[in-house]
Image 1 (cartoon, rainbow, N blue to C red):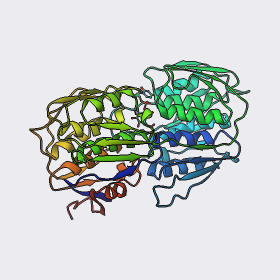
Image 2 (image 1 turned 45 degrees about the horizontal axis):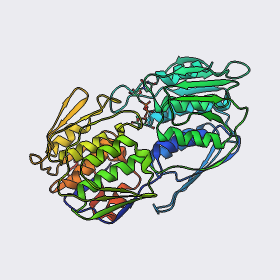
Image 3 (image 1 turned 60 degrees about the vertical axis):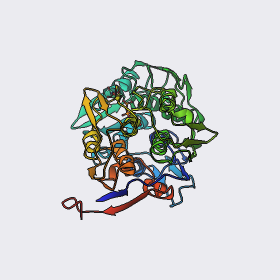
Image 4 (image 1 turned 180 degrees about the vertical axis):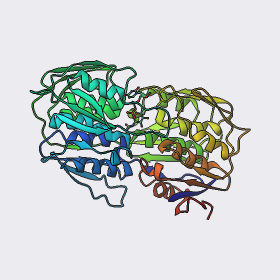
Length: 439
Ligand code: UD1
């Protein structure tokens, strides 16, 4: 297995480039299944989740061509030729590796009129149900049954009629799945309390480019007029907003006071107002430019409480990283997650590095400086965002930190150690034996 070994205390200098959005790439890949022909998607990040989803797509008979090279400055392109989609199934062996494989439910229902998709298994944090995906598809008129761990959905003879669905809570994944099925339904569909995340909007833009009729993208009500067929397209993925937010936090933590760190290939609007507002309150100066963000290092970070919420609220995918930043702030603060109320697997690991954190229900109480100086230790990745928070903590901890099980991190951060190395951080990937992680 691989681990990342970090020597803490090195300054972050120069610049770093954000890759294509993971959480947008996956819906875009699913969308390409709806057209009878080859679609090309640019700026697909080189990530394990992308390779996993490519394999999920290949099972259906569609052809996926993706040969990324090692130069992170080149946006990578993927061709999905969905001329032949004859096997409308997503097997357990692949779906268990990544929940987003469940997007095959809507994609295959939309393309083939039927889908057999394994229920996703357990997840590293909390219950992450798919009830809204299933109820939404049913509301469009599909017949859905569960059999031996699989969800089987079928459109009635003559095709999906379309329908109206109100989701509670708002769900990114369910909105994507319902849209995938609704765009080729016979009639009109309406999704109320739909997700307005940029990932959904950009995905909806690709569907529109393919010929879909969707109104209300970016609002809570989506109205879809079904069309008979969609066309293959060429489309560009957006930059990863969570990667941007992570690097802004890294810059606040490790840029020397008075120096500027630059983050390229960005779309800062996608961060949402709340993150930008809270970041400003930390007293760390930021400049939002056209396609870049500059962060200035400071002597003192001010403590700021955050509460996660759907877009444009504070992203749950940035709360673990924020917790690390607050551990270095000049006083106490709270980090509350209302989207995933027990997403705190990183907390015991950060405590091993000396962070003073206490979990109470859906809230982490952070005791910031001057009480906290982190010191290096061996820590364990438990999920994607938790693992990057450990890397951030390792960057500011005294001495050496070993972050084990980095396969979690590889699911969503493209070439992280190479990017950080180029920006002055001492970080290396090493393989290790799970029974002797120190060896
Ligand atoms: C996506 C992101 C993930 C992010 C999350 C919230 C991808 C691949 N993943 O996950 O990184 O953390 O959005 O921004 O894009 N819910 C239900 N029933 C359902 C579905 C969801 O109750 O059928 C609830 C969830 O438990 C959660 C809330 O809805 O409390 C939001 O989850 P959702 O937006 O669906 O998250 P994902 O799409 O799985």
